[in-house]
Each structure stands twice: as structure tokens, then as C-alpha cells.
Image (tube, rainbow, N blue to C red; front, side, top):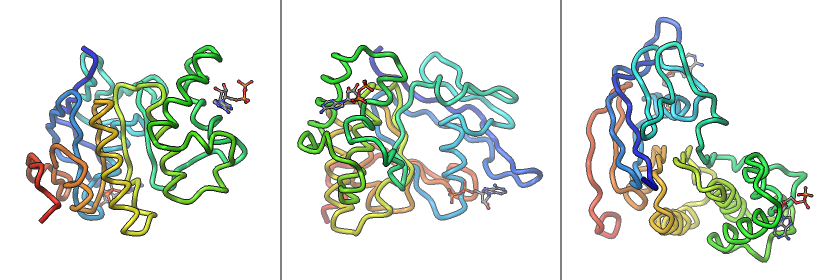
Length: 231
Ligand code: ADP
Ligand code: ADP
């Protein structure tokens, strides 16, 4: 049971009287990479906030494997969910070195120092940045900073990885190469991942399955074939 599945059962969410997610049913297979794709305002960020634990459903339940994450009136806090997250703006701590940024989730989990150092270097190796361990994030390019954030997200081997439009701040050539790099890394580590984007090409480059959201409902789901994005 190395990998966990994600289940949303009849999940609804409202801002006051404005319902933004309507009875979402979704099953994400263990170890799969799913893109949540849809236009601005369709509810992607809201759904991601529910998965992270920054919002609580009005109705329904969210499960990671056999663990209940949230139901109406109750929500497990983000730090108890065993997730790794990558944000659009990298969200690295500027006063910490690259290695210290990556080590942070391990410190939170009280991983002993020797093991921490080994796992930090392994994560940096996976993203090709071992030479940058002692540098501050400000000295790195946008693509490099996002690779550091990726290393930080995977270093503690969380049950679930969540991505919030991580490539939107990068220029399009870099976006494509980093997207393929991330796809390869996600296949290697095999962690169940949810990737929010409004860019259909990113979804096709990266995901096994695409869930199309429209106006707060799942409009359709499709499996991505390996030839996608190469036409
Ligand atoms: P997306 O991420 O797909 O752009 P969001 O989840 O941000 O969509 O927004 C879904 C809907 O919820 C939109 O109609 C948006 O206007 C509304 N919404 C988002 N945040 C708030 C808020 N803080 N208060 C009220 N309505 C909000
Ligand atoms: P601590 O706060 O644990 O005394 P530091 O603040 O120097 O140590 O570093 C924080 C963490 O960052 C360390 O636990 C270590 O895992 C990691 N780290 C720092 N520098 C390196 C490095 N050059 N190579 C690998 N890991 C490093």
C-alpha cells in the first residue's frame, strides 16, 4: 500500500450563498497524475484548497486512502495530511539556503540530521541542483527556483503531491521543458499527484488523466494517450 488513492464523494463548497463546487465525485487512482483543467473561475483553486485542507466542504467527504481528510463541518489541518505542495510563485524562504529550504519538511517531521542531509542531497539530485545546495534562492533563475520547490515537495515522500499552476510564471520554452522533466520525475517516484492548470498542453504533457472542470462540476474526464502533445 505504498501509494494512496484520493476520493471525493459528493463534495460541495460555497462562498456564502454562491455555490462554487457542486457535488463533485472523483476517484484518483494510486500513483496516478491527474490534471484539473478548466477556465478561470471554474473552481480549480477551491478544489485544491479543499485537498490541501485550507477550506472545508459544505457537503461530502474527502479521503486519502483509508484516511478521512474532511467532511461537512470537519477538516484535518494541512500539516497533518502528509502532502507536498508546489505553488505558482515558488514560495521559497529567502533567508534559507537551497538545502535548508529542501530540508524543512524533514525538520518538521523530526528526521535526524544525518538522514536529513542524505535525503536533501538525493532530492536535489533528482532535480539536478546538487551544486546549488549552499546558494540562496534569490541567486537562482525562475526554473531553478521551481525545481528547488519541487525537491522540497518530494523530499519527505508524502502520500500526495499537489501542484497549483507551478509553471505559469515561466516563459513558454522553459515551461515545456520543465513540464516534461516533472512528468518524468513523477513517474519515477510514483506519488499520487493532482496538478491544477488552465493550460491544456501542460495537462497533456504531464498527466495520465485530465479532469475537466466547468462551472463547479466535473464536465468530463479522459485518459491521456502517450502520443498527446507530439502532434
Ligand atoms: P479557478 O481557480 O478555477 O479560477 P476559483 O476556485 O478561484 O476558480 O473560483 C471559483 C468561484 O469561486 C469563482 O466564481 C470565484 O469568483 C468564486 N470565489 C473565489 N474566491 C472567492 C471568495 N474569496 N469569495 C467569494 N467568491 C469567491
Ligand atoms: P541545522 O539547522 O540542522 O543545525 P543548517 O541550518 O545548517 O543546520 O541546515 C538545515 C538543514 O539543511 C540541515 O539539516 C541539512 O539537512 C540541510 N543542509 C544544509 N546544508 C547542506 C548541504 N550543503 N548539503 C546537504 N544538506 C544540507
